[in-house]
Length: 433
Image 1 (cartoon, rainbow, N blue to C red):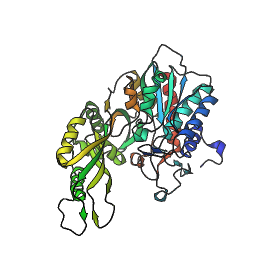
Image 2 (image 1 turned 30 degrees about the horizontal axis):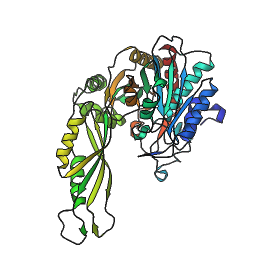
Image 3 (image 1 turned 180 degrees about the vertical axis):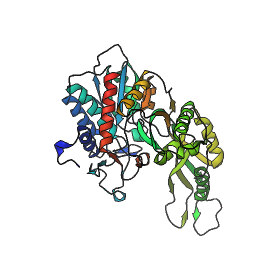
Image 4 (image 1 turned 45 degrees about the vertical axis):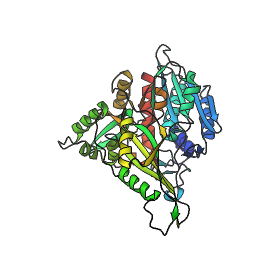
């Protein structure tokens, strides 16, 4: 750890400061709120001579934006966006206080270190580097920091896009989280550049039965009916279905792997700690995440509910819902709580070339492979405005660090030198694209 505060790189200080704002988002409108973090970001932007605008359509759910003038106003603007909320962290499960922003063992620890206050800090520090040097980016930059991404953007990016579309005037492309990070394939390093996202469908399953005394012979039991449905769905092995992005990703992994396999799951396994993220991009996933039933030990309830997190490949939402109904049975109700879209854009074009070039200048000769993310980002909201979104939060990581496993996990942390690397790459991109 640096000897004193002044020795900390600015990107690390910003990320640490943001982690110290508890912006926990439980979903369903229950949140600590992003207001203080948004005000911190706004004050930083003001210190650079920018004029931030705030939008708080719901109390404490604060979004902030600023526009940076580029050298060439005729080029389409580029959106750089992040979210300020984080998922809950159960402090008893962590080795450190999840909201202390502790620096230990060359890493910054805390909720948001990976998802995604690291990228928020990289955006701010990169823009600061340019503006303090009297430079301008190549084109206009639109910097936006959203609320509520961890709840699908319902009280964040979706409202901003609907109510403040002028914030994005002239923009055609966007960069955000979960891409540009390195993985290890055997002894070789590669970077994953995110050009797609699976669709999100959050479901509530509801089974009904007949209430009664817990001592009775009672076949019409809602809890039993629900448990059978949840077990069947949770154990379903969905088939591999490749898209243009995942096909190209597998080809890239095959070029790097030491063996000659073409099996998608075996190729995913070759990525070590990143395997979980890679395998989820190849198929639909249906994970039970919550159960609610009953109110007394000796009372059989007349209803039971379960929450299911469904992620489908782009365009397969309807067929997946039909298959889920078949799996759980017609006597189990399915309620759609949240449904959004999947995205997939080509791994081609001037922005892709620029991102690949910036990585190559920082880490020469290391290949960049496209991938389709199993989760989702606020790029989905921007797609409604015709803005093509990419995941590019560049980080050069240790081969043995389970980086993807820390998304929504315990002891979330990011190496300090990875943050500095990411800022350098992002600053280079903004200078040249």
